[in-house]
Length: 254
Length: 268
Image (cartoon, rainbow over the protein chains, first blue to last red):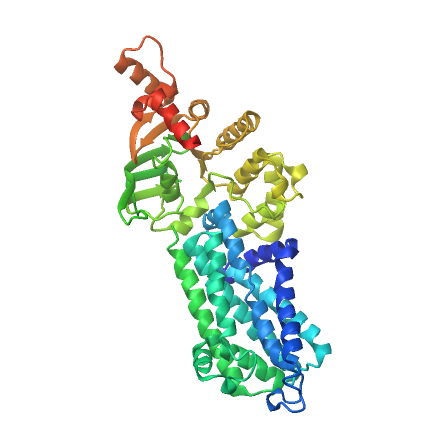
């Protein structure tokens, strides 16, 4: 059995776990939708679709949707469940099996990817009645789902690193707070070129910006491959780094 | 499988503690356990029992020395060693959100069985540990004894040559403890070598053919319970045969008063 098959077996277990703890999944959907509604409610009149060029004729909800999708992707619970496994001893049980160490860290990330697909689709579906349409069509929607769920994997992998290093639920929970500001040091209310200079600099060096701009481009512009390509490249590089660090960490785990 | 189920030579584990100082938890342990034995590994808290088990089961790196389980070097070929080892560590390591059957099926799959074979093996083991009726219930609803039996079953999915049990009855009520003892005897009767750590000397006396006592990372006594008792009787010129408790206290340099004091300190 190869590493991917082993990871998929563990991923199925993680998915069962998610289905059995709906209370952990509910905030993943509710809080980003809450932010979407509140942000659009507060700033929707400031940016009317008819007179705001960057909305390309859509409602402000279309501009805000990527922020909410990325917020949802940053609610991955993989790391907290991993800490639970570590504290309860089940992690050692898995490490005592002859499966690849990589499969152990990939298993939960597979489940996060699957959850990311579902949550992104639900968020887009909920946004449609509010004047949002996906300019890039069905293929664009597919790309939105792929990039969002891949970003969810990156975030969860980063959290898993903290879990593996600290072996503590409290430290892992606090770790997510370190990453949370990255979501807001982005052009989440207006395009990057209209930000104040310090904020523009912060957004430019923040990788989340490029993922957000790729999603926004697929929703508002269609296929602007320069933005989409950069978004995928950023997600790809971050995924390689985060998963690579996970693999290195579990191999040296004592 | 080689004649010796477990062999360790000059096994050492050194950690850096929080202050950054080197702490030697295991200081050159030599072990030789024959196939088919139930071997007891005793010692006070912090003596190095669990650290030794974790090294032998590939869960912890070895600072220096060598160890082979079922003839396989656990440092050089950990994946192969894991195929020969069953592990049930302190505090049954289970996933409370799965059912007993799901947990065993998953464990079987991780040892390379296909779906139908895994399902069949899980049912066999559930029957062996008398949990068939509770197989569809989530593990979080199990009692301590049931969890311990499920943990034992999960360590047996691949019919290991050597089963490591780290304090398998700690925290169990007397009835559950007796059930676990029966399971250990039954598993051993099927040919599996059992390496058992315990703080309960009666448990070691009841189950183990041979024991080793470790203290401060070093093995201080080794032999059959009878040999160790006779040795103490002879050396101390006692009129009656001492208990294993007395052997333990003698070997670790503890007195009953000091042990009672330790317990009090822990409880406080």
